[in-house]
Length: 334
Ligand SMILES: *Cc1c(COP(=O)(O)O)cnc(C)c1O
Image (cartoon, rainbow, N blue to C red; front, side):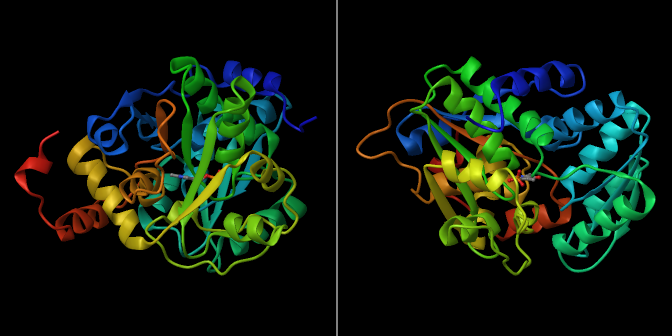
């Protein structure tokens, strides 16, 4: 018995329909050539808020609105806050988003531009969460957790449904891993359809709370550090209720990437796929370029990489692409 059911996921899909995009799943010739098997990219970069977080946030807020809720608060590394702000505006709900000083300015500005109140507190996602929970206690806000919430997980799981429907023979799905709402949802939907689908989680080597927790056998704290994959920062909560167990039960392997690899993923996405992706969204591509995803002894079928978001500061993006070595003409063409 699982805390989550497929019925929850189908209900989430009906709720978010028309508010969230069913995103393209496109084959990548360059990555297929490297992997020796068809590689597809699930492009959450095209969602109206530039990341998949709109799925879970829209599912949770639609349910809250139906219950008569008028004001919500959340804590976010940026993309979830932007998604909550977008969904709140669409539903006529007031939103406050607590973010730490580590959240990039472009993400804070995007939250404000959607009419939400941005409050900047502390140096970590945990600090932001404490402030959000204070508002819940003292001012009667409804809290919308960024990942450890069944409504949010069910919303993210709709990505898994879309993948298995579009590509029934998918063998392997690669998902960026932070709090685990995305991983738990996608893995639950995918393995419900086909148990043998391999599920890989990819994260940065420094400050990866879920990875440290899985290795310790229980949720643990890690120090939050600056990384190109800023959307993967933050803890999973010592009182984690859902995503730790779901991830532990559904994950086949976890891959850790250093900052240079993440930058290479961003550059490859730009040069070969004409995609602007943020660091957190580049980790799947980066892992493949590192040779870390190859199935032994041979690929059993198509591989899908979930490309989770586009919200990188455009100046930072330009610097990363310009700093990368130029390529030989034969590799530049795809
Ligand atoms: C939030 C986020 C993730 C990780 O999702 P979790 O549910 O926290 O594991 C990955 N990529 C992007 C772009 C994100 O915004």
